[in-house]
Length: 133
Image (cartoon, rainbow, N blue to C red; front, side, top):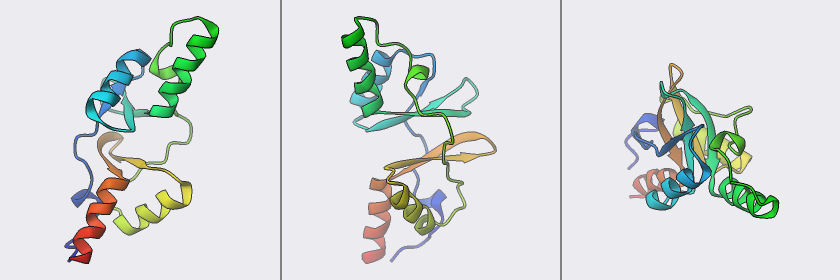
C-alpha cells in the first residue's frame, strides 16, 4: 500500500546535475556514466537554471559536425525558459498527471529556489508498484 502521496517521499534526493558552463562533451559523459536520460543544470549555489536531455546533447553533436565547430557549452543547448518544477510537498498523483499531460519524463524538485531532488517516470512507477502491493 502506498504510504504517502507526498512527493518528498518518492523523489530522487540527489539528482544528476551539471553546470551551464560545462562542455557538452562533459555533460554527455555525466549522462552516459549515470545511465540517465537528462540532467538538471545548476549554478554554483545549486539554483536550478535549466535542464539538458540526451536529445539536446545529440542536437549539439550534430550541429557541431554539420558546422565543423566544437559542440559548445551546456548553456547553448539546455532548456531554460519556463521551467516547470515541483515542490517537495506536492501530491505525487498531481505531479504525475501534469508530467503526462506535458509529455515530460522528469521534473526537478525545488525548495526555496534550490534544487533538492528530481522526480522521474521511474520513481512514479515505483510509487504505483508500492500502491498495488
